[in-house]
Image (cartoon, rainbow over all chains, first blue to last red; front, side, top):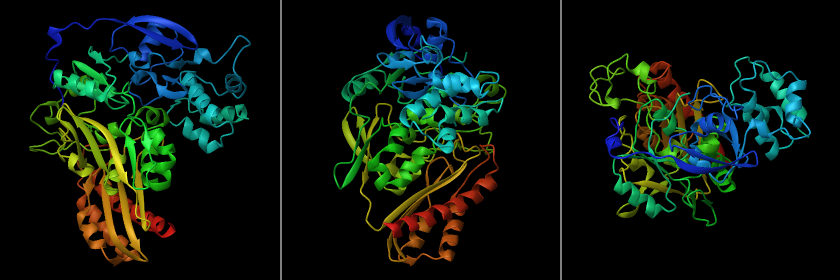
Length: 166
Length: 332
């Protein structure tokens, strides 16, 4: 049942809280309001703008990040709820030596057009490959089924993931 | 960026603490499990709770206990992915594993929980919209107004109940363990639903679903779920059916058929259940069950597809589910 307004909003003040977030192996301490999503904090407080907002409602997958190795939607995750967990964004895929094999495969296969869905596609594929190193095309399609590409370059994305698998 | 309105975040470490916090902030708190249903609704301004109580920090709510040969206990905080992949579930209740696997997309299943699916809000074309969109029309019953834009002159809300796992759990006669301020109680999942769109379940504001218990299926039984959706990648059901049968040779000894997205709650096709008892399953019988399912389904114009089509599909999908359930019972 919908609640009308917020009856006790006048009676209390929501305060900022300190949160310790482990993002791409680095510890970050941020002071945030409890209603802020992981996506907002990543983009606006930490400055990692790789994860994108598409729909903001969980249907497009542009905000996909990995939390403890599982692909989740950062736009529907409260930042406070992932304290102490390992968060991986697209910025954490490459290392000092350069792009990850998966990123390299995306480039080589032209699996990037406008690029807006790419961080989500990469992380969904990364989660798949870490669990299933040799997926077939059906498994790849299923893994990226929540990531919408409006340039409709799915064929090349599937090819790229296949080539990056063992 | 689509933002949430302010609220206070509560993260209790135990069920007891959670219950007492719910009691303290009665009526002002929303429970957060996976967040895939609650947070989009809050972003659209459908709910504006003063407190959000996160259940994910409570230990022991995300286990699947399949040790005993009598029952499988599924913690309410188990993600749909963990149910889809659990051996205890896939081996004994393939229909449930399948239903979990067709909810949303992988990311949503990694977050969304079975408890959340059981307590899912109803949906409607005139409700699940942005504030801007909703402000262009009169406030509907679900939003606290007096009109229904779907059924003219309606006295109740007709929003549609679209959970995928609930028809299956009902067909399997699952029991639900609920923690409340007065202790723990158990009920059959069927008893949870009000079939009224505005408040689809009768859980109190201080109740927390803790566990779902499934009795091990009879050796001669089989179950199935079939779902119709617009996009195969990520969508709610437009129609769906779960079937569970106990077979003795070619004769059906017991049956349960439950429809998804056919009303404001999971719709049990009681006529077909009575009809099937001690009846040999033939092509004609399956067709008759399809017709009964079609009669029991009452979809209204609250989704993108026409109610006529969805009603017809309820029949088709009930037939398919029954056929598969019978086949699985024979294979066991």
